[in-house]
Image 1: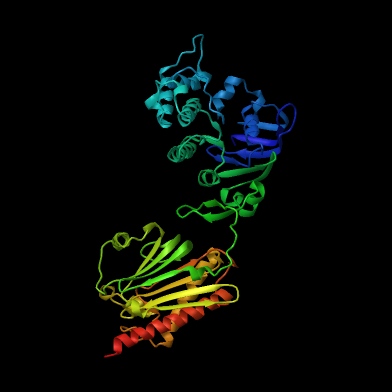
Image 2: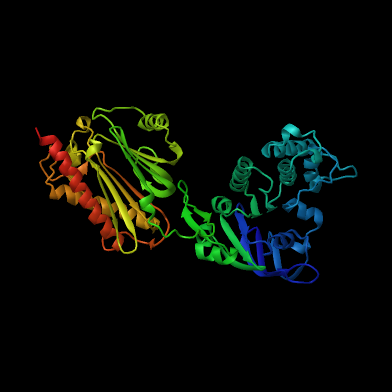
Length: 491
């Protein structure tokens, strides 16, 4: 145990800004301190560094009371990077970083040894200030000054590093670089770090634990996945936000929400503009939809306003279909950054469009169906994949409503079940196995929601929205299949 804080209270002029805070810190641990302005974060850091007197409670550093350390002894154990960058220095960068070696100097002249110089050089390189080591501090930008003072703190070779908004003044690349370095130093050098942060997502990504504060008190202390709980953060910060999960690492991500705009009373789906020709079906919107799709372009969750279902020859073959599709969209003057793009070998003229108003919401469905590669998914493992041809049933579902992420996924499931039932009712067979097909090998689907109006937490088949999706997708798929059948079998 490096640091132990028990019932800590303290502040300025005898007043307790910090009230009864207790926590411990292990060697190599990164602890983030979060809280709104005025919650006492900086005051707590000053108490931990010995800059402010403790009114009540104890601080133990290496099992020794903090107050028992001399200033030079404490400087060998603890380094501090304050919130406000100092600009009063008239020294060059290297001289300022060298001040970090003061706690280790002995003798009358306090000169740096070769070992001191090596450590100073390493600290400058780690913080990327070596290239301007001969410049004066006041000539540097705020971000550069911040990095110089961090280098000075690292030159102290502390066991505990106290940072007050260390990413202040730094651009994104340096913020990430700094926090990556801190995490590495903590892991490989057993450096313990306590950092005040304002960026909730940076705290989530880089901190082992988070201390959440409000009005000088401890609200929560735990790992980020527990502390960064939506309702707790909304209460402490007095603002609306949403918690999602990071797409790459198992960490929460916090998104701030603007004040809700006035909900439009008009049916927003009526504002969609449909263009249909031999090359593509385009549905364009004056506003963005939140979408979840398996499209070639715009797959996954995104916000889009243009939706393209492009016809391709059944022998279409491309090593990089996504790039080729983007080139197609650009040539047709569609904004790739706001477009969902699918492909189909089905004749676009056979597409089925259905829009229906229900009691509290509206659903619009578009389906194109090509059946040349129908497959029974339960028997797909018996197919020779090399002989697959382009088939494709593409399904688009537009919803005038506000869907949760769970509802998006459930809508996909409901729509897929409805599509499979339509193929069953139309007696579409897997030509290889002779069994009822459940789809084609290249089907694609999209759910698009306005995210306005009625909220839908779920979209399973028992819900009103799920029932609507099931009804319309089944009907639209059946009609598109019937048109495809007539085209295939009419002389």
